Length: 62
Image 1 (tube, helix red, strand yellow):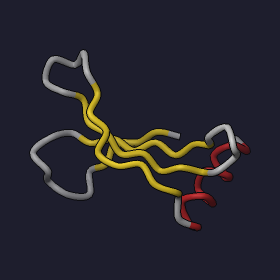
Image 2 (tube, one colour; image 1 turned 30 degrees about the vertical axis):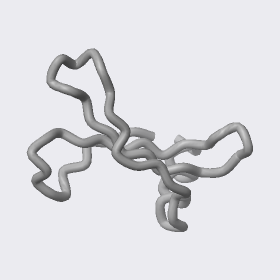
Image 3 (spheres, helix red, strand yellow; image 1 turned 45 degrees about the horizontal axis):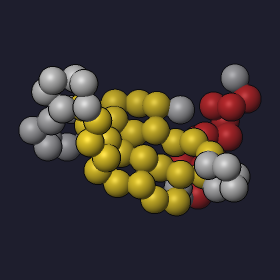
C-alpha cells in the first residue's frame, strides 16, 4: 500500500508505504525521491502502528 504524504510542508514530496517484511511484521516506510528522480532517500522505517496495520489489512482484501 503506497500513498503520497501531504500532511505537512517539508519542502519535498514524501511518500509512505505500508507492507510486510519476510518475518510477517507490518512496516511503515517513509521516503522521498531526489530531484534527479533516479535515487530514493529513506526518511524512516518503523513497525506500523495498530491503525496502520488495520489500513493495510483492509487494503489487502480489495
